[in-house]
Each structure stands twice: as structure tokens, then as C-alpha cells.
Length: 224
Image (tube, rainbow, N blue to C red; front, side, top):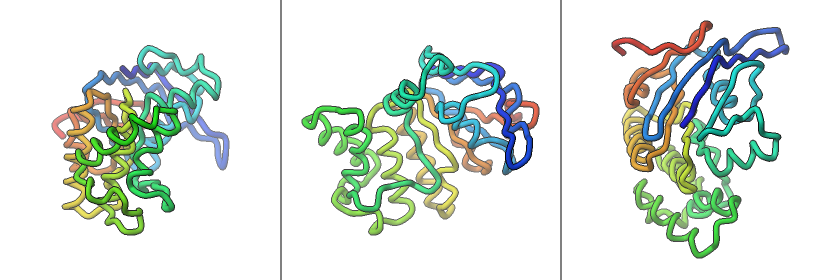
């Protein structure tokens, strides 16, 4: 479903540096992969490159057979909107929208018919245990509840690829464990390909396999 071949990315400012060097990765539908690395190793940059938010300097990226290098900005944005779901450390919920409206947003942006939106949102909120909080606003929720809303929002449009960037970084250990279990169950249940970026070995162990990002690229972590 996702194929990276020899992807490299450098930045010129504030100082010249190569962030990604010859990164290759294959992720199949239904597979959930964790990527670990030290702070500054390029984990978030890798997600941005996969999502088409950053253009690689070299290498190829294919999502569902589509080569991102062939897409202009509008086509890349459409692919992100329709084929990719994001879960962020900082939740990124819109504070003036209810839980239901936050989850519905990807469907609205994708112009899904109104008659289909409400049942799909209700299904996802039930799956993450938040059906009774659908009319609440983010300021009324705990951190764990906000992250569950973010997971529902990332999956409601049935993406082929789910990208999670340190999704438990702002949560206590108990809540983090619950969120990781939920994220894995939802990604696997939807048959999506999932990538979890984390610095936590505990979090990474929730995945099917762990890849370690270093200056020389990605390599499987042995006996994690």
C-alpha cells in the first residue's frame, strides 16, 4: 500500500543538514508499523514526506500505486484529504466545533452527502467510546478523550493510510496505553496501513514491527 524507495531530504536553513538519507519502507494494507528514533532524527519529516507535505530531494514514494512525485500541489492535497488520516500529539481539534462536527470535518471537506455523514460519525464515535459526548466541545474533554476524537476524525473517511505522530506524548501512562490499544484496533479493523512515529519503546511495542530511523536510513529493530 505504501512504498518508499531510497528517499532523501535535506534542508538549507538554519544550517545545511541531511535529515533523511536513503530511507526505504514497505507497508501493506492491514499492517501497523512503528518508527522510532532519537529527537531530531527526522521522524516527523518522514511523515511529512510520506503525506506529500514536503518534497523529497531523491527517491520515490507511492501510495496505493500513485507516485507522489507526479502530483501537483492540488492533486497532492486531494490525495491527503481522501487517502490519508492524521493523528497528532497536540490533537489539533477545532475548539469552536463540537466533537461530532470535528469528526465530521473530513467528510464535509470531501463533499460526502449529508445523509451519509451522521451515521458514519456516529459509528466512529461509538467505536472510540464517545457517543455520549458528541455535543461536547474540546475544552470540556480530557486529554485522552480529545485523542480519541482525533482518532475518530482520522478514520471517519476510511483512509488507506493512517499516520500517527507521537499520539500519546501528552498523555499519562494509563491513558496512553488505552489510546494505543484503540488506535491499533481501529487501524487494523479498518484494514488500513498504519504508521506510528514515537520515541517510546512502550508505545512502539503496540505495532506489528518496529523500524529504527538513523542517519543511514531505516532498519528493523531486533528484539525490541
